[in-house]
Amino acid sequence: MGKLQDKVALVTGSGRNIGRATVLKLAAEGCNVVVNARSNQAEADAVADEARSLGVKALPILADVSSKEQVDTMINMAMSEFGRIDILINNAAVRPHKPFTELSLQDWEAVRGVVLDGAYYATRAVIESMVDHNFGRIIFFTGEGAFRGSATRAHVSAAKMGLVGLARGLASEFAGNNIRVNVVSPGSIDTSRANPEWYANSPPSASGVPMGRQGHPDEIAATCLFLVSDDGGYITGQTIHVNGGDGYY
Image (cartoon, rainbow, N blue to C red; front, side, top):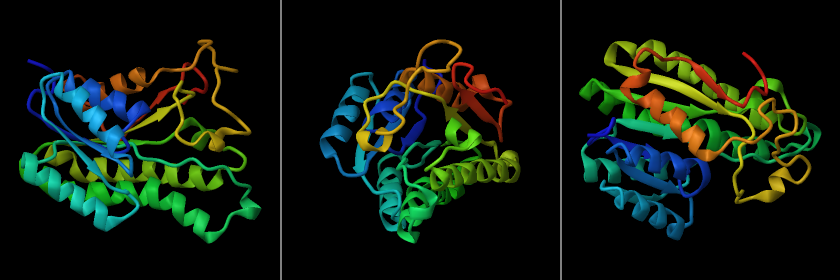
């Protein structure tokens, strides 16, 4: 039996890269999965098929996490299929670069909507069921740039650091319900980006990383598996930095 046998996990933004790797890592441990993509049905279906090949059930759902209505619909579909969600991994994100003096309210709200509001919508939609079942594992994703600060990304950093505060508050509030909440902060990860223009001026690289290489999506997925399994049973309210030594906290 796997470490997550017959559990149910929803991973937002899981059509590719870290999200996809995380779905497959959990599925390999016996976890049924809900695969979420914003608009690419083919990607979501492909990841779901990969998960099924590992012997678990998989449900692909398109939803824009910045829309509460779409998130609620997604959660309702998942609940109808599986009866519960044991694990929520809030991976969906956007990372646009823009100087602060050029940042419009629309730009600010667009980033906050996906990164912070989307995580709130999904968490709010599943938390009561987790309380009822006396079991829950929640992960938020931030990033090393949010901790260091990064020019032209103040809006992204603000939204991602908001997730750290959200995780700490939830960890304290729901520890007694066997719900653990943590944050994963990836460093420079080798991924094929859906929006390469976000990194036109500062593409991810291994420059300055003491380990001399970028991380792999599977290494982030392995961190998530550790946190949501019994291996991480005494960890909650923490931020785990997976950065090859590029920053110490």
